Image: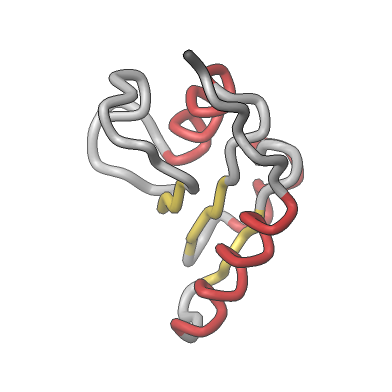
Amino acid sequence: MLKGRKLPYRVLVTDINLLGRIDGWEVAKQAREIDPNFPVIYMTGAAADQWPVNGVPNSVLLTKPFAPAQLVTAISTLLNATPPIAPTN
């Protein structure tokens, strides 16, 4: 979805353990290849110790269980820290 750029996504919220070929670490790395400043929030119940090694810079890690307000705060914090996207013609 990010590569297609059909919808203007503003932040990536991903679990670390995903079903399929790639995990949340890789999803975030691919998002950052598209946009180096793309805000990323990781969620995990078991992989928090891997964040310093696998997480992208300027991301947030939420450890499960967490309160919905923590997710809202993380999104707000990252969006307020992200430089605005320049319009393209």
